[in-house]
Length: 89
Image (cartoon, rainbow, N blue to C red; front, side, top):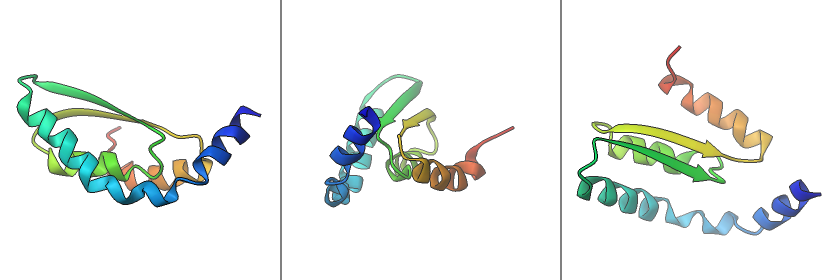
């Protein structure tokens, strides 16, 4: 029941994916202004992980821990393929 609620809620948001560059730039600006040595970032409803990948690419010299959550099994599969090269064993 809850899963269907969120699935229906998300079904109307595909047009909102225009803001990737805005999100990446905003987070990068925040990181650059901060005097912290490391950062943990959580993306709830991360989809295929494009925002986190953009943040990682733009801030590759920083100590980042990136986390994401999504309810879609299809996105989990896509994400695993994209992120596999960044994971260490």
